[in-house]
View 1 (cartoon, one colour):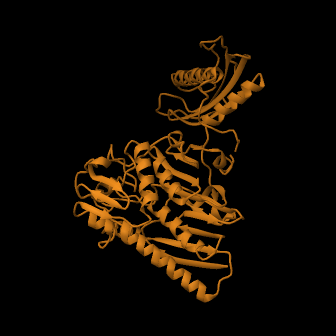
View 2 (cartoon, each protein chain N blue to C red):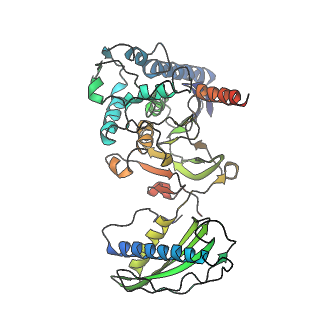
View 3 (tube, rainbow over the protein chains, first blue to last red):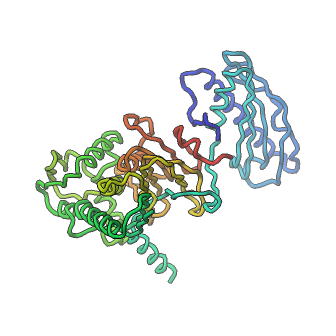
Length: 173
Length: 288
Protein backbone atom coordinates (compact mmCIF):
# COMPACT_ATOMS: atom_id res chain seq x y z
CA UNK A 1 0.00 0.00 0.00
CA UNK A 2 1.00 3.55 -0.53
CA UNK A 3 2.61 4.67 2.73
CA UNK A 4 0.97 8.08 2.39
CA UNK A 5 -2.53 6.71 2.52
CA UNK A 6 -5.21 8.55 4.34
CA UNK A 7 -8.87 9.13 3.84
CA UNK A 8 -8.68 12.70 4.91
CA UNK A 9 -8.49 15.56 2.54
CA UNK A 10 -6.01 18.08 3.89
CA UNK A 11 -8.30 20.85 5.01
CA UNK A 12 -5.75 23.58 5.33
CA UNK A 13 -4.62 23.36 1.73
CA UNK A 14 -6.76 24.81 -0.99
CA UNK A 15 -5.39 22.36 -3.51
CA UNK A 16 -7.15 19.45 -1.88
CA UNK A 17 -10.44 21.29 -1.96
CA UNK A 18 -10.00 22.17 -5.60
CA UNK A 19 -9.40 18.54 -6.39
CA UNK A 20 -12.44 17.54 -4.41
CA UNK A 21 -14.58 20.02 -6.32
CA UNK A 22 -13.12 18.75 -9.57
CA UNK A 23 -13.93 15.19 -8.70
CA UNK A 24 -17.45 15.99 -7.58
CA UNK A 25 -18.04 17.81 -10.84
CA UNK A 26 -16.67 14.89 -12.82
CA UNK A 27 -18.75 12.43 -10.88
CA UNK A 28 -21.87 14.52 -11.45
CA UNK A 29 -21.02 14.64 -15.13
CA UNK A 30 -20.49 10.91 -15.33
CA UNK A 31 -23.79 10.20 -13.63
CA UNK A 32 -25.53 12.80 -15.79
CA UNK A 33 -24.31 11.21 -18.96
CA UNK A 34 -24.97 7.75 -17.69
CA UNK A 35 -28.55 8.84 -17.16
CA UNK A 36 -28.75 10.43 -20.57
CA UNK A 37 -27.38 7.23 -22.04
CA UNK A 38 -30.30 5.31 -20.66
CA UNK A 39 -32.74 7.30 -22.76
CA UNK A 40 -31.25 5.77 -25.88
CA UNK A 41 -32.16 2.18 -25.26
CA UNK A 42 -30.19 0.29 -27.85
CA UNK A 43 -26.94 2.15 -28.20
CA UNK A 44 -24.22 2.10 -25.67
CA UNK A 45 -21.34 3.54 -27.58
CA UNK A 46 -22.14 7.14 -26.95
CA UNK A 47 -19.27 8.98 -25.41
CA UNK A 48 -20.45 9.97 -21.97
CA UNK A 49 -17.87 12.68 -21.42
CA UNK A 50 -17.92 15.27 -24.11
CA UNK A 51 -19.19 18.40 -22.45
CA UNK A 52 -17.23 21.21 -20.87
CA UNK A 53 -17.21 21.23 -17.13
CA UNK A 54 -18.45 24.14 -15.11
CA UNK A 55 -16.64 24.72 -11.89
CA UNK A 56 -15.25 27.43 -9.68
CA UNK A 57 -12.24 27.32 -11.94
CA UNK A 58 -11.86 27.27 -15.69
CA UNK A 59 -12.27 23.65 -16.58
CA UNK A 60 -12.51 21.49 -19.63
CA UNK A 61 -13.25 17.84 -20.10
CA UNK A 62 -11.12 15.62 -22.25
CA UNK A 63 -12.87 13.09 -24.36
CA UNK A 64 -12.44 9.53 -23.28
CA UNK A 65 -14.53 6.73 -24.71
CA UNK A 66 -16.24 4.43 -22.26
CA UNK A 67 -14.00 1.50 -21.47
CA UNK A 68 -16.77 -1.04 -21.36
CA UNK A 69 -20.48 -1.06 -21.79
CA UNK A 70 -22.99 -3.68 -20.96
CA UNK A 71 -26.64 -4.46 -21.42
CA UNK A 72 -29.52 -2.29 -20.39
CA UNK A 73 -31.02 -2.71 -16.97
CA UNK A 74 -34.09 -1.31 -15.36
CA UNK A 75 -31.98 1.30 -13.56
CA UNK A 76 -32.02 4.95 -14.52
CA UNK A 77 -28.37 4.69 -15.43
CA UNK A 78 -26.81 2.58 -18.09
CA UNK A 79 -24.36 -0.01 -16.91
CA UNK A 80 -20.81 0.47 -17.95
CA UNK A 81 -17.52 2.05 -17.11
CA UNK A 82 -17.26 5.76 -17.67
CA UNK A 83 -14.11 7.75 -17.76
CA UNK A 84 -13.63 11.48 -17.47
CA UNK A 85 -10.84 13.95 -17.05
CA UNK A 86 -11.35 17.08 -15.06
CA UNK A 87 -9.24 20.20 -14.98
CA UNK A 88 -8.84 22.65 -12.19
CA UNK A 89 -6.62 25.55 -11.31
CA UNK A 90 -4.25 24.87 -8.46
CA UNK A 91 -1.97 27.45 -6.87
CA UNK A 92 0.78 25.91 -9.00
CA UNK A 93 -1.10 26.27 -12.31
CA UNK A 94 -3.67 24.22 -14.23
CA UNK A 95 -3.99 20.59 -13.18
CA UNK A 96 -5.92 17.58 -14.31
CA UNK A 97 -7.48 14.57 -12.67
CA UNK A 98 -8.95 11.45 -14.22
CA UNK A 99 -11.87 9.47 -12.92
CA UNK A 100 -13.27 6.19 -14.04
CA UNK A 101 -16.55 4.92 -12.60
CA UNK A 102 -18.28 1.61 -13.18
CA UNK A 103 -22.04 1.58 -12.86
CA UNK A 104 -24.21 -1.48 -12.48
CA UNK A 105 -27.92 -1.04 -11.91
CA UNK A 106 -27.37 2.56 -11.02
CA UNK A 107 -24.85 1.72 -8.32
CA UNK A 108 -21.22 2.70 -8.52
CA UNK A 109 -19.49 -0.63 -8.23
CA UNK A 110 -15.98 0.56 -8.90
CA UNK A 111 -14.18 3.85 -9.08
CA UNK A 112 -10.64 4.71 -10.05
CA UNK A 113 -9.18 8.09 -9.52
CA UNK A 114 -6.14 8.87 -11.65
CA UNK A 115 -3.89 11.68 -10.49
CA UNK A 116 -2.40 13.71 -13.36
CA UNK A 117 -0.44 16.27 -11.42
CA UNK A 118 1.35 19.17 -13.03
CA UNK A 119 3.83 19.71 -10.22
CA UNK A 120 5.14 17.79 -7.21
CA UNK A 121 2.93 19.58 -4.72
CA UNK A 122 -0.20 18.78 -6.68
CA UNK A 123 1.10 15.24 -7.03
CA UNK A 124 1.22 14.94 -3.27
CA UNK A 125 -2.34 16.15 -2.74
CA UNK A 126 -3.74 14.24 -5.66
CA UNK A 127 -2.21 11.05 -4.36
CA UNK A 128 -3.66 11.73 -0.95
CA UNK A 129 -7.06 12.16 -2.50
CA UNK A 130 -6.65 9.13 -4.72
CA UNK A 131 -5.95 6.93 -1.77
CA UNK A 132 -8.89 8.36 0.12
CA UNK A 133 -11.12 7.86 -2.88
CA UNK A 134 -10.89 4.10 -2.73
CA UNK A 135 -8.98 2.02 -0.29
CA UNK A 136 -10.51 -1.33 0.35
CA UNK A 137 -9.51 -4.28 2.39
CA UNK A 138 -8.09 -7.25 0.57
CA UNK A 139 -7.71 -10.71 1.96
CA UNK A 140 -5.14 -13.42 1.53
CA UNK A 141 -5.51 -17.01 2.63
CA UNK A 142 -4.15 -17.50 6.12
CA UNK A 143 -2.21 -20.53 4.89
CA UNK A 144 -0.34 -18.46 2.35
CA UNK A 145 1.05 -16.06 4.93
CA UNK A 146 3.47 -17.16 7.60
CA UNK A 147 1.97 -16.01 10.89
CA UNK A 148 2.67 -16.36 14.56
CA UNK A 149 -0.88 -15.58 15.63
CA UNK A 150 -4.12 -14.22 14.23
CA UNK A 151 -5.98 -11.32 15.77
CA UNK A 152 -9.63 -10.90 15.00
CA UNK A 153 -13.04 -10.54 16.43
CA UNK A 154 -12.60 -11.90 19.86
CA UNK A 155 -13.68 -15.46 20.27
CA UNK A 156 -14.61 -14.70 23.84
CA UNK A 157 -17.38 -16.81 25.11
CA UNK A 158 -17.41 -20.41 24.30
CA UNK A 159 -20.78 -20.26 26.02
CA UNK A 160 -21.97 -17.65 23.62
CA UNK A 161 -20.97 -19.69 20.61
CA UNK A 162 -22.53 -22.83 22.06
CA UNK A 163 -25.77 -20.98 22.59
CA UNK A 164 -25.68 -19.59 19.11
CA UNK A 165 -25.15 -23.04 17.63
CA UNK A 166 -28.09 -24.36 19.62
CA UNK A 167 -30.29 -21.57 18.38
CA UNK A 168 -29.23 -22.26 14.81
CA UNK A 169 -30.05 -25.92 15.26
CA UNK A 170 -33.45 -25.03 16.73
CA UNK A 171 -34.15 -22.68 13.86
CA UNK A 172 -33.52 -25.48 11.40
CA UNK A 173 -35.80 -27.95 13.16
CA UNK B 1 10.05 -23.55 24.53
CA UNK B 2 6.95 -23.95 26.64
CA UNK B 3 3.41 -23.68 25.34
CA UNK B 4 0.29 -23.60 27.49
CA UNK B 5 -3.14 -23.90 25.94
CA UNK B 6 -6.25 -23.80 28.06
CA UNK B 7 -9.77 -22.42 28.25
CA UNK B 8 -10.63 -19.65 30.67
CA UNK B 9 -13.15 -16.80 30.92
CA UNK B 10 -14.93 -18.34 27.96
CA UNK B 11 -12.07 -18.07 25.53
CA UNK B 12 -9.08 -20.12 24.49
CA UNK B 13 -5.66 -19.09 25.69
CA UNK B 14 -2.28 -19.81 24.24
CA UNK B 15 0.90 -18.82 26.01
CA UNK B 16 4.32 -19.31 24.42
CA UNK B 17 7.41 -18.89 26.54
CA UNK B 18 10.84 -18.87 24.96
CA UNK B 19 12.81 -19.84 28.07
CA UNK B 20 13.48 -23.45 28.94
CA UNK B 21 11.44 -24.45 31.97
CA UNK B 22 11.51 -27.68 33.92
CA UNK B 23 8.24 -29.57 34.08
CA UNK B 24 7.92 -28.58 37.72
CA UNK B 25 8.37 -24.91 36.85
CA UNK B 26 5.83 -25.29 34.06
CA UNK B 27 3.28 -26.83 36.35
CA UNK B 28 3.78 -24.16 39.00
CA UNK B 29 3.56 -21.33 36.51
CA UNK B 30 0.43 -22.66 34.85
CA UNK B 31 -1.22 -23.14 38.20
CA UNK B 32 -0.44 -19.58 39.33
CA UNK B 33 -1.70 -18.21 36.01
CA UNK B 34 -4.98 -20.06 36.32
CA UNK B 35 -5.37 -19.06 39.94
CA UNK B 36 -4.86 -15.40 39.04
CA UNK B 37 -7.33 -15.59 36.18
CA UNK B 38 -9.92 -17.08 38.50
CA UNK B 39 -9.34 -14.31 41.03
CA UNK B 40 -9.92 -11.68 38.36
CA UNK B 41 -12.99 -13.45 37.03
CA UNK B 42 -14.43 -13.74 40.51
CA UNK B 43 -14.23 -9.98 40.91
CA UNK B 44 -15.27 -8.66 37.50
CA UNK B 45 -17.31 -11.26 35.65
CA UNK B 46 -21.01 -10.56 35.27
CA UNK B 47 -21.39 -14.15 34.09
CA UNK B 48 -20.58 -15.59 37.54
CA UNK B 49 -23.16 -15.79 40.28
CA UNK B 50 -20.46 -15.56 42.98
CA UNK B 51 -18.67 -12.51 41.58
CA UNK B 52 -18.32 -9.11 43.17
CA UNK B 53 -19.91 -7.56 40.09
CA UNK B 54 -22.96 -9.81 40.47
CA UNK B 55 -23.29 -8.71 44.09
CA UNK B 56 -23.11 -5.07 42.99
CA UNK B 57 -25.89 -5.72 40.50
CA UNK B 58 -28.15 -6.81 43.34
CA UNK B 59 -27.68 -4.23 46.05
CA UNK B 60 -26.37 -0.75 46.44
CA UNK B 61 -23.64 0.02 48.96
CA UNK B 62 -19.93 0.56 49.24
CA UNK B 63 -17.68 -2.21 48.02
CA UNK B 64 -13.95 -2.78 48.36
CA UNK B 65 -12.27 -3.44 45.03
CA UNK B 66 -9.18 -5.62 44.53
CA UNK B 67 -5.71 -4.03 44.30
CA UNK B 68 -5.70 -4.37 40.52
CA UNK B 69 -8.78 -2.13 40.05
CA UNK B 70 -7.32 1.38 39.58
CA UNK B 71 -5.69 0.90 36.16
CA UNK B 72 -8.88 -0.53 34.68
CA UNK B 73 -11.39 1.75 36.40
CA UNK B 74 -9.35 4.84 35.62
CA UNK B 75 -9.18 3.91 31.93
CA UNK B 76 -12.91 3.25 31.87
CA UNK B 77 -13.58 6.69 33.35
CA UNK B 78 -11.25 8.35 30.84
CA UNK B 79 -12.86 6.55 27.92
CA UNK B 80 -16.30 7.31 29.31
CA UNK B 81 -15.47 11.01 29.24
CA UNK B 82 -13.75 10.94 25.83
CA UNK B 83 -16.63 9.06 24.20
CA UNK B 84 -19.22 11.26 25.92
CA UNK B 85 -20.58 8.35 27.86
CA UNK B 86 -20.83 5.89 25.00
CA UNK B 87 -18.17 3.54 26.31
CA UNK B 88 -19.47 2.77 29.77
CA UNK B 89 -19.38 -0.12 32.23
CA UNK B 90 -23.02 0.75 32.94
CA UNK B 91 -23.96 -0.82 29.61
CA UNK B 92 -24.26 -4.13 31.53
CA UNK B 93 -28.02 -4.00 32.00
CA UNK B 94 -28.54 -3.09 28.35
CA UNK B 95 -26.38 -5.91 27.02
CA UNK B 96 -27.94 -8.35 29.41
CA UNK B 97 -31.49 -7.29 28.54
CA UNK B 98 -30.59 -7.56 24.86
CA UNK B 99 -29.87 -11.22 25.48
CA UNK B 100 -26.14 -11.41 26.20
CA UNK B 101 -26.81 -12.48 29.74
CA UNK B 102 -25.33 -14.85 32.28
CA UNK B 103 -27.27 -17.76 30.83
CA UNK B 104 -26.49 -16.80 27.22
CA UNK B 105 -30.18 -16.70 26.36
CA UNK B 106 -29.44 -14.55 23.27
CA UNK B 107 -33.04 -13.47 23.42
CA UNK B 108 -34.03 -9.90 24.06
CA UNK B 109 -35.83 -9.86 27.38
CA UNK B 110 -37.47 -6.47 27.32
CA UNK B 111 -37.44 -3.02 25.84
CA UNK B 112 -33.92 -1.64 26.29
CA UNK B 113 -33.49 1.31 28.60
CA UNK B 114 -30.86 4.01 28.33
CA UNK B 115 -28.21 3.33 30.98
CA UNK B 116 -27.68 5.88 33.76
CA UNK B 117 -24.81 8.37 33.80
CA UNK B 118 -21.59 7.42 35.60
CA UNK B 119 -22.17 9.85 38.45
CA UNK B 120 -25.72 8.70 38.99
CA UNK B 121 -24.50 5.26 39.98
CA UNK B 122 -20.77 5.16 40.62
CA UNK B 123 -18.49 6.86 43.07
CA UNK B 124 -14.98 5.52 42.96
CA UNK B 125 -12.22 6.30 45.41
CA UNK B 126 -9.88 3.39 45.42
CA UNK B 127 -10.32 0.93 47.01
CA UNK B 128 -13.91 1.98 47.66
CA UNK B 129 -16.52 1.80 44.96
CA UNK B 130 -19.93 3.02 45.99
CA UNK B 131 -22.91 1.80 44.03
CA UNK B 132 -25.58 4.45 44.58
CA UNK B 133 -28.00 1.99 43.07
CA UNK B 134 -27.57 -1.58 41.87
CA UNK B 135 -26.40 -2.00 38.28
CA UNK B 136 -24.77 -4.68 36.17
CA UNK B 137 -21.24 -3.50 35.46
CA UNK B 138 -19.79 -4.82 32.24
CA UNK B 139 -16.03 -4.80 31.82
CA UNK B 140 -16.17 -6.48 28.44
CA UNK B 141 -14.58 -3.56 26.59
CA UNK B 142 -11.20 -3.67 28.32
CA UNK B 143 -11.37 -6.36 30.98
CA UNK B 144 -9.95 -9.17 28.92
CA UNK B 145 -7.07 -7.00 27.75
CA UNK B 146 -6.33 -6.08 31.34
CA UNK B 147 -6.41 -9.71 32.42
CA UNK B 148 -3.87 -10.51 29.69
CA UNK B 149 -1.56 -7.84 31.14
CA UNK B 150 -2.03 -9.30 34.60
CA UNK B 151 -1.14 -12.79 33.34
CA UNK B 152 1.92 -11.19 31.73
CA UNK B 153 2.91 -9.85 35.15
CA UNK B 154 2.58 -13.32 36.65
CA UNK B 155 4.91 -14.68 33.95
CA UNK B 156 7.39 -11.81 34.40
CA UNK B 157 7.41 -12.34 38.17
CA UNK B 158 9.12 -15.66 37.42
CA UNK B 159 11.95 -13.83 35.67
CA UNK B 160 10.66 -14.59 32.17
CA UNK B 161 11.06 -11.70 29.73
CA UNK B 162 10.20 -13.19 26.32
CA UNK B 163 6.72 -14.57 25.83
CA UNK B 164 3.47 -14.33 23.92
CA UNK B 165 -0.05 -14.44 25.30
CA UNK B 166 -2.96 -14.91 22.90
CA UNK B 167 -6.41 -14.95 24.44
CA UNK B 168 -8.97 -15.31 21.67
CA UNK B 169 -7.15 -12.97 19.32
CA UNK B 170 -6.07 -10.34 21.84
CA UNK B 171 -2.32 -10.52 22.11
CA UNK B 172 0.49 -9.35 24.37
CA UNK B 173 4.09 -9.84 23.33
CA UNK B 174 7.28 -9.27 25.23
CA UNK B 175 10.72 -9.91 23.80
CA UNK B 176 13.24 -8.67 21.29
CA UNK B 177 12.02 -10.63 18.30
CA UNK B 178 8.94 -9.31 16.51
CA UNK B 179 6.04 -11.65 15.86
CA UNK B 180 3.72 -11.60 12.87
CA UNK B 181 0.10 -11.04 13.74
CA UNK B 182 -2.41 -11.73 10.99
CA UNK B 183 -5.45 -9.44 10.90
CA UNK B 184 -8.49 -11.59 10.38
CA UNK B 185 -10.75 -10.68 7.48
CA UNK B 186 -14.10 -9.79 9.06
CA UNK B 187 -15.82 -11.37 6.05
CA UNK B 188 -13.80 -14.56 5.85
CA UNK B 189 -12.11 -16.17 8.81
CA UNK B 190 -9.83 -18.15 6.54
CA UNK B 191 -8.29 -14.94 5.32
CA UNK B 192 -6.18 -12.18 6.73
CA UNK B 193 -6.22 -8.64 5.38
CA UNK B 194 -2.83 -7.64 6.67
CA UNK B 195 0.09 -8.68 8.82
CA UNK B 196 1.09 -6.52 11.76
CA UNK B 197 4.57 -6.92 13.22
CA UNK B 198 4.30 -6.77 16.97
CA UNK B 199 7.24 -6.36 19.32
CA UNK B 200 7.11 -5.60 23.02
CA UNK B 201 3.52 -4.49 22.86
CA UNK B 202 -0.07 -5.56 22.55
CA UNK B 203 -2.68 -5.76 19.85
CA UNK B 204 -6.43 -6.18 20.26
CA UNK B 205 -9.19 -6.41 17.73
CA UNK B 206 -12.87 -5.76 18.05
CA UNK B 207 -15.47 -6.83 15.54
CA UNK B 208 -19.13 -7.65 15.58
CA UNK B 209 -18.95 -10.56 13.22
CA UNK B 210 -18.63 -13.53 15.54
CA UNK B 211 -20.64 -12.69 18.58
CA UNK B 212 -23.78 -11.51 16.92
CA UNK B 213 -27.35 -12.32 17.73
CA UNK B 214 -30.57 -10.83 16.52
CA UNK B 215 -29.61 -7.26 15.60
CA UNK B 216 -26.91 -6.93 18.26
CA UNK B 217 -23.19 -7.40 18.54
CA UNK B 218 -21.26 -7.25 21.81
CA UNK B 219 -21.06 -3.48 21.41
CA UNK B 220 -24.19 -1.44 22.02
CA UNK B 221 -24.36 2.33 21.81
CA UNK B 222 -26.05 3.54 25.01
CA UNK B 223 -27.57 6.53 23.21
CA UNK B 224 -29.15 4.68 20.28
CA UNK B 225 -29.51 1.32 22.06
CA UNK B 226 -28.34 -0.30 18.84
CA UNK B 227 -25.06 -1.83 17.83
CA UNK B 228 -22.93 0.50 15.67
CA UNK B 229 -23.11 -0.52 12.02
CA UNK B 230 -20.77 1.93 10.30
CA UNK B 231 -17.68 0.14 11.53
CA UNK B 232 -17.22 -3.59 11.18
CA UNK B 233 -13.84 -4.08 12.82
CA UNK B 234 -11.04 -2.25 14.58
CA UNK B 235 -7.55 -3.13 15.70
CA UNK B 236 -5.40 -1.20 18.10
CA UNK B 237 -1.77 -1.72 19.04
CA UNK B 238 -0.46 -0.13 22.22
CA UNK B 239 2.01 -0.69 25.03
CA UNK B 240 -0.54 -2.41 27.21
CA UNK B 241 -3.29 -4.85 26.31
CA UNK B 242 -5.64 -2.96 28.62
CA UNK B 243 -5.26 0.19 26.56
CA UNK B 244 -5.34 -1.64 23.21
CA UNK B 245 -8.54 -3.45 24.17
CA UNK B 246 -10.29 -0.35 25.51
CA UNK B 247 -9.37 1.78 22.51
CA UNK B 248 -10.42 -0.91 20.03
CA UNK B 249 -13.93 -0.55 21.46
CA UNK B 250 -13.74 3.25 21.83
CA UNK B 251 -13.03 3.55 18.09
CA UNK B 252 -16.54 2.27 17.42
CA UNK B 253 -17.79 5.47 19.06
CA UNK B 254 -15.28 8.24 18.35
CA UNK B 255 -12.76 9.28 15.74
CA UNK B 256 -9.18 8.25 16.55
CA UNK B 257 -8.22 11.92 16.74
CA UNK B 258 -10.38 12.27 19.84
CA UNK B 259 -8.24 9.70 21.58
CA UNK B 260 -5.04 11.57 20.83
CA UNK B 261 -3.93 11.69 24.45
CA UNK B 262 -3.04 8.00 24.21
CA UNK B 263 -0.15 6.53 22.28
CA UNK B 264 -1.52 3.87 19.92
CA UNK B 265 -1.74 2.63 16.36
CA UNK B 266 -5.02 1.64 14.75
CA UNK B 267 -6.91 0.40 11.75
CA UNK B 268 -10.66 0.83 11.32
CA UNK B 269 -12.63 -1.23 8.77
CA UNK B 270 -15.84 0.47 7.69
CA UNK B 271 -18.99 -1.26 6.50
CA UNK B 272 -18.18 -0.45 2.87
CA UNK B 273 -14.90 -2.33 3.47
CA UNK B 274 -12.78 0.76 3.12
CA UNK B 275 -10.32 1.35 5.90
CA UNK B 276 -8.52 4.06 7.75
CA UNK B 277 -5.19 3.32 9.36
CA UNK B 278 -2.43 5.00 11.29
CA UNK B 279 1.11 4.82 9.94
CA UNK B 280 2.20 1.46 11.39
CA UNK B 281 -0.95 -0.23 10.27
CA UNK B 282 -0.88 1.33 6.80
CA UNK B 283 2.26 -0.62 6.04
CA UNK B 284 0.66 -3.78 7.38
CA UNK B 285 -2.36 -3.90 5.10
CA UNK B 286 -2.13 -5.94 1.93
CA UNK B 287 -1.47 -4.07 -1.27
CA UNK B 288 -3.97 -3.94 -4.08
